[in-house]
Image (cartoon, rainbow over the protein chains, first blue to last red):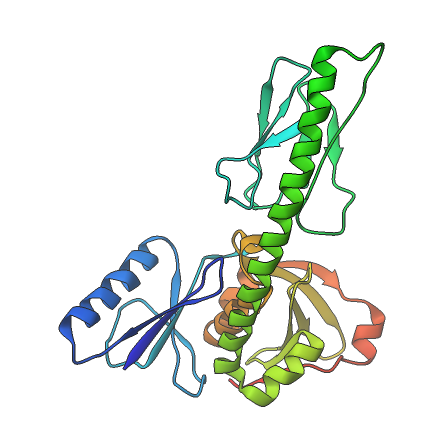
Length: 74
Length: 212
């Protein structure tokens, strides 16, 4: 199982997908791509939370992505 | 008298307000942030927030001159309504934000672990050892990152766009991920607001520790 954690106003929304289920993978990929188009950044994160890395493409074999809204200097 | 109108009954951000004394003319936000901090009447007078809260719950400017008119009496009723409405609305927002903050802290726990998140709950800080410098990422601070150099600490300002709508800890999560992935990019994007205060330099506050 993989998951997207999408930051939002009410805290993050969790989308869980089964990498063996094509429909779920496709829905997760579509969500991922839509958010990147809106300026979100995706970080793949291992289950232990280590090695978060910014990625541009969705891979259903990754266990977790955290998607964050754009960051700006203040 | 000024009173507010919202785009939606459930919106937590006021987008416009009306001066009932000047033909219902409306003034709208020019800010990108979700929270108003000042507004201007059509007569070019600026009213600025004096609240330490991030959200206004009521705002009223009353400047009657002469005798109270029928129009003025009606206006006072409207003030009462808006106060009640905004106070209930404020309570609802506070409840939603508290729930969102719990979720954000759970997300941070994924990154730094249960033990460190307990330290974070106490301190509101995450320490990260970077490749060039070390950092404190601070919850809900004007300066979200403190860059720790050899003999000084610099205040950096960088945050989620429209940060006021997100839980404060989501800002910490985002900055932690960004720093771990691209320290140089964060340093380039952040605004450096100069040296931090001396107390901070002499003794770094306790903070949760994030791994790289």
